[in-house]
Amino acid sequence: MNRLARALSSIGVIAGVVALWWAIVVWTQSAIFPTPWQVVTGTLELAEDGTLWEHIGASLMRVGIGFGIAVLLAIPLGLWMGRVRGAFVTLNPIFQILRPISPIAWIPIAILWFGVGNASPIYLIFIASVFPMIVQTTAGVHTIEKRYLRAAENFGVPRDKLFRKVIFPAALPDIIVGMRIGLGVAWLVVVAAEMIALRSGLGYMIIDSRNAGNRYDLVIAGMIIIGLIGLGLDGIMRLLESMKNVRWRYVH
Image (cartoon, rainbow, N blue to C red; front, top):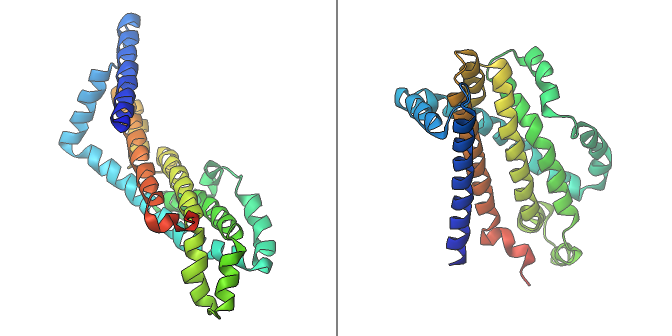
């Protein structure tokens, strides 16, 4: 019942925002800014000719590749840095210097190195998502209770098995948090990169709609779709957080 009430309250707020949006557009008699219904019809127009699905697929493909590469690098590196003191002391200052740099600042470098194809946004997504995951994974290893490690050492557990059976499962909640943060940043970055250097994807769709006849109905539609997909991606990460195998560290 509580879940239903929360869902209804969220739907009510969204409906109120849409109604207010519609009323403001009608009251101001705006000739440019669209009503919610114009956004719906514009979205259906793109969906019917297949353009919308092409843009969504292009953006998701770039995020999937860039984020996947970041996961494959960040998790092993973070586990190693968290466990080996020398690796942490050596590499952590470098990552702490690079981490605050906005991914958008890397766009000129990405274009210089990789041109204006798919490689540039994939590189930007990698840069945006790899550092949060490295830092969070390292922090997860550092917060493992020492009794787990001492118990494994007392039983003579080999180092590779210690990583697989103790360190990785214990750090998994923090790893998932890092993945959630990294994926959110990656989705922001791909849209910005597509606005500048590509001719496909949701970011390009927004800029192209603005330049091709001031189609602000499609601009708003693209913004809403980006938000909905971002919400869906975050929901997937939240489902991972709720898995029983992820929560075992906190079970007494």
